[in-house]
Image (cartoon, rainbow, N blue to C red):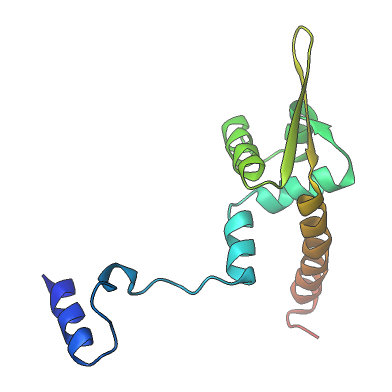
Length: 130
C-alpha cells in the first residue's frame, strides 16, 4: 500500500514513468558493482589467492584455509565456478581426482586483489592510509 502511494506520487512528479514501478531503488550496474558481487563472500578472496599460487585439489585447498568448513568451501567454489572465475577439472579414477584452478578472468582478478590486500595491510599496520 505504501509503495503504491510512493509510485503514484513519483509518477505525478514525473520522476517515475508509468510501467517502471518495479525498477525503483535498483542500483546502477557498473564494473565495480559486478566485481563486488562476484567476490562477495567471506572466503572467496582467500580461495582466489590460494588458487592464484597454484592449482589445488579440494583437500589441499581446505588445509590452506583452516578456518573454512568443507560445506562452505564447496559452496564458495561452486559460486566461483558459476561466475567463471574457477575451473573444476575431474580426472577419472577411483576415487576421482578433482583439481581447481583459476580461469583467465580469475587470474586477472587475483592480480587486482593482491593490490587491494597490500593496501589493507598498510592500513592495518599504520592505522591509516598513506
